[in-house]
Structure formats: structure tokens, C-alpha cells
Image (cartoon, rainbow, N blue to C red; front, top):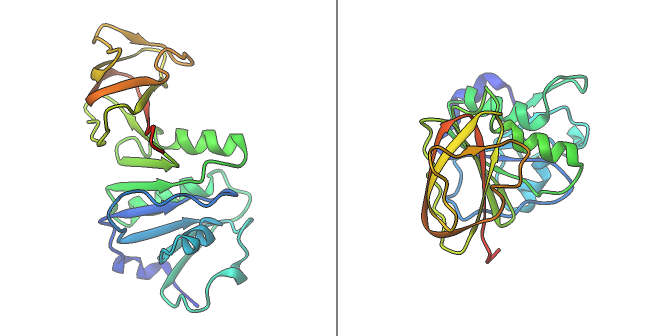
Length: 223
């Protein structure tokens, strides 16, 4: 039913989407159609519900029985991992994306389920394996990216949206433009603080990280 991973060289990682698991089906983002769809475990069924053709399924199959894979998916690649593992299914799906040659990934998540999974899923985009790549996590009307010095903020954001900055390091600083309350380069952004919560976008925002790693969450008021 499925091809071996030795056939992964035929994949086109130009526009890679990773469909996360969890109990809720994600929403489709307003992005160009993907050239490569990687499902994290039960994310396979979410992808089918969204009308997407899945190229790869990665996971331990604790929430998706192998028998539920479409028998017609003759070209489906399946990467099965033991349930006793150190990495989450989403982390493994991202690892596969980089191995396949992706340089940018859109992660689609429904945003519900266990709180620990939701938190780790968001933090993953800022870890050492992923921070050097461009990852945009889509969750309903919100998008999240991780920034570090030298990494540009390139999301298109409309005026009136909410923008939240969350520091992940104890010595983080950033400067901003285009927000109702802007930061200067000398401003320190403390971790575990609500200081950066729900700033208002006035015009196309600019965010420059001078030290540390920051999560940027943009939420459309129209969502």
C-alpha cells in the first residue's frame, strides 16, 4: 500500500505543509496549495477531511490505526516510530520535512486537545533544530513564528490585528515599528511576562530581534 522512504527523493518540498494531530480539524490557511503534505499521525485524517492529498505520514500510530490509511494511496510514504520515543509526532514530521529538503514549512493545527501538547507544539518552532528554518504555525485566526537575531519577520499583517511578543530567553530584546506601543532596541523583553500581549497593529509591522529568541503570534480580528 505504501512506498518505502527510499522513494522520498521524488517529493517536492517547495511548499511544505505539516498537518498536526489533535482532536480538532485545522482550518485551511490563505496560502498557495502545498507541493508536499506531511501528516503527523491522526493529522492524516485531518488532511483528508480538508481535501488534501497526503504524501507522507509520520508518527507512532497511537491515535491513527495503520488500517485507516487509504488503500488507494499507492504513493503514500509511511514513517513509523515506536511509541516509546523521545520526540513528538510533530517534531518527527518537521525532521522529515528538513530531510526532504524543505526550507519553509506551514504547520496546520486545530488548537485543541491536551495543554502540554499544545504548548510543546508551539515551542518546537523555536528549538535548535527548527529556529534556523522558516516555520509558520496556523491555528484558526492566529499565526505564530519564532524569531532570533538576523531572522526577518515577513508575515503579511493587516492593520487592526493583534500582535503578541513572547520572550523565550532571560536576556531578550527587540525593537518594533508599526505597532500602537512600539519597543526600542534598549527595551528588554522579560520571559513569562504579559508585557508583549495583544499589541495593536497600526501599519505593516517591523520586528527586529537584537538578543534572544521571541515567539511572535499574530491574530486577525476578522477571524
